Length: 562
Image (cartoon, rainbow, N blue to C red):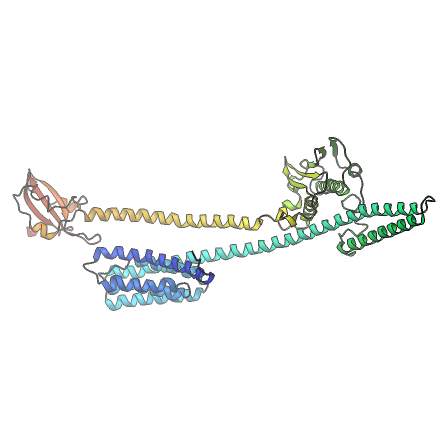
């Protein structure tokens, strides 16, 4: 099946939504028109309002003000044709007014539009000379359908703008944080390159030195000395090429925190720079001399690790100690270095600080704005990842724990070439939080609409039930005229409605009935709002004894007239 093109798919959605909205609004009008199909004009009561809505609903996207004016015209048709039903189109007016509040920011123009709609409705009432019910309709119902939904739409528009602006700022801050993290990763790669230069250059220099010593051996022939000279020159060239290559990826000397800065220590108490190598025990010893409570334990069989792995283990301990001293002063630090199988696990955990537990978490755990504090663990994670290991850092037991698993043999240095993304880039935090905020906003907005909607449905249900009670007990005048006293009750069953009128006014019930009879009451018409006369049928046993027409509001002079 051929999929629609992008431009076509872009307008299919709005068209479908507009069609569904028109169908819902038109359905209310059609349903209401069915009750007065014999009295109302089909043009004014049905055809013209539906055509107006067919223009107003899609037009509300480009000109929401004109759409509101057209919907008001559909409501005003009920004033021009009193027999037609106007109230169902109040829903259309309210919906289009809400869309005006959402889609337009011009407050003054909206208020002028509402004033024009009111002026048209009131002028039409004055010209047609309608009754009080329609004046009430024009003065109260239509203004409510104009103003209240518009205010709800403006609130929705302001809330969406606020959320959108806030999350755009959050997205910008997150991009900034990712940029800082990328700088930290690049800086850590540079440090790894420096470590490679230090270890590999040292080994090559030893090879060149031994080759030079062999040249002086008296047991070698001239050809052997010439070959050794060539070998020593090649090794010296390799050392020079290595130095030049590393010099390209090094930070510039004027970078404050670059590895070329000879006097910049890695930690707060004078640890060596990235180019030096020392045992972890010496690092821990200096920390203890600085007043830090540190417990170091090694478990498993000690082994000689490659320089990159050894340096990475040192950096894990160093960075964790630095964070513990900075963010949990006075806390006890426990270091475990476990050699097992083909890997080494380094765990550094600090307890909760005795004074300020709120400052325990390292900066990366305090929000995206602390980008500078995110560099340490970001760079450390990059270094561990590049040699094929894993690193986890999280709060634990009131303190904080850093756990690194390092392979005994260095894996691929650039794992992203195989498709492995950096750990902190998998799933943007701002995107997840934005989705949560949108979900909460939709829920709150749904609740705000559901409460009045539920109340309205309850009122409508009650009104519908009452209307059914009033219309199901109607005895038509022609059928009432066909009833004759003396007929059996069974003979009258096909002429009588299914229900009796149960809400008979007390004044009607007070009218005396023939002695020895039981009476049933029925309404004379199905009007819900208008007063209707009451038909009373009195039975003596199973026969109709008398029938009476009782006004719903008996005149006070009726007794005198009798």
